[in-house]
Length: 96
Image 1 (cartoon, rainbow, N blue to C red):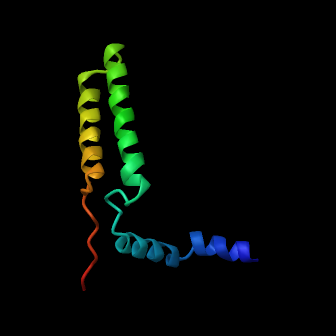
Image 2 (image 1 turned 180 degrees about the vertical axis):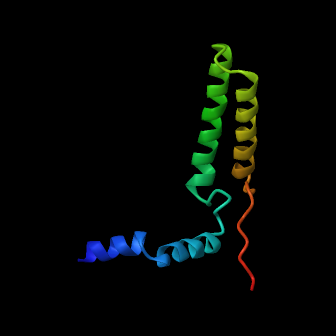
């Protein structure tokens, strides 16, 4: 019975979507890396892996100009995140 109620709560009621809206507005790290190992380890690791993949793809001539532009944009965004900045546009709360 509790599984059925949980599923109904998760899928069928508007309570779940309003809980998610509250979580999005309450979480200040939604558009930036959370402090701790994400900022110190995971972010730089992703940036390094992206850089190495770009080098490998370039030497094997598997990458075209459009892909290079997309990868450079991702590198720029990761660099901003690693420095503690925001990426994207944070959602604004609705004022009535």
